[in-house]
Image 1: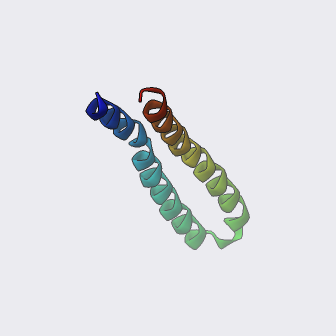
Image 2 (image 1 turned 90 degrees about the horizontal axis):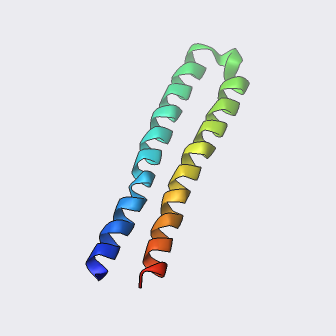
Length: 74
């Protein structure tokens, strides 16, 4: 039973992998956009921060689900 709990928690945390990849791609594209149009830096930064926050929230939800799986099923 403990093995299944560990596997379930590991799968739940996989959302952090997607969030990390997404934040990395978004940061790269924002840097490219700022290099091409420096005058739009403020707008690009605001959109980047909002997108990163939403992606990070997804990772946090996965972490919370993993903790709930571990705590509730022991």
